[in-house]
Image (cartoon, rainbow, N blue to C red; front, side):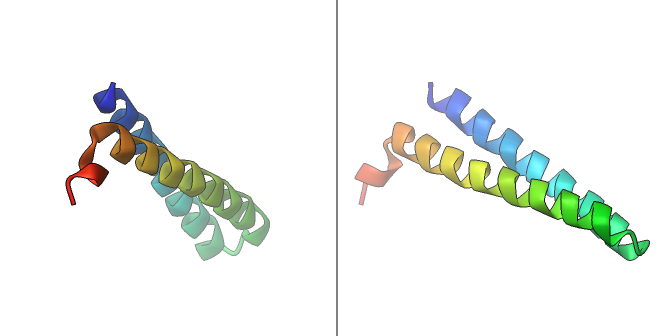
Length: 66
């Protein structure tokens, strides 16, 4: 199960990175409306990635080793 949780977190991180790159491309071309849309998507993916990473960490038991 922890591997699935880590894979889910990784997928959200990849989606966030893709949205960040796409936003940067649009902003660089002066298309700020599309850039803003992709920036918002990146934020949403980043939030999901953070939550998924916390869950994966908890499931791995790593937080109990300290």
